[in-house]
Length: 185
Image (tube, rainbow, N blue to C red; front, side, top):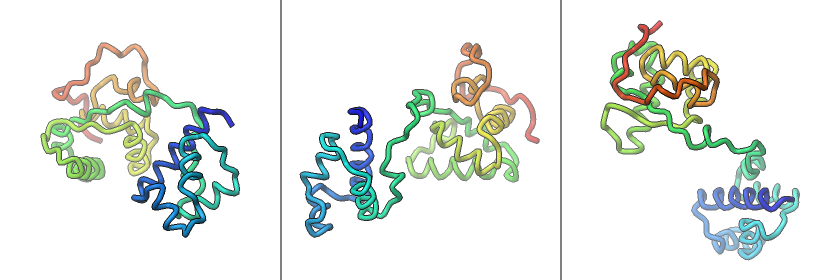
């Protein structure tokens, strides 16, 4: 097992443990000594290899699918993991609810979680756009195009989002005051 993979696996194990509000000692206590804090800690640091059997048992202990403990096998992409997509909330508010309702509710939920009510723009992750595409029963490319048509997403974001589009559109700046290209469908 490569050192990078061991560290990535360890980071996933630590994240799951932290999500459950457990310290290493808490894992040992909750498991009645089945999982020693020192062993789990060495898995999390990537210092000790974990067998498939032990990983499966740890998944059962945490109550998560084994796949949740495994790091993403795809090479990480800076575009999809760190790119923020800026939505124009003013344009979103002027769209018909039957078309933009799911996006408006999604944006409203994020605003409430962040306590961010500036009402002009909202940053979301590329992963959020993938989730929204599922809600709209579209591909991420199709939804990106639709959001640009609605004026909710800045023109030129196709290449920034990483779902296609022309890579040479870099002169387009993200601007919360962009104009809508077409009316909603």
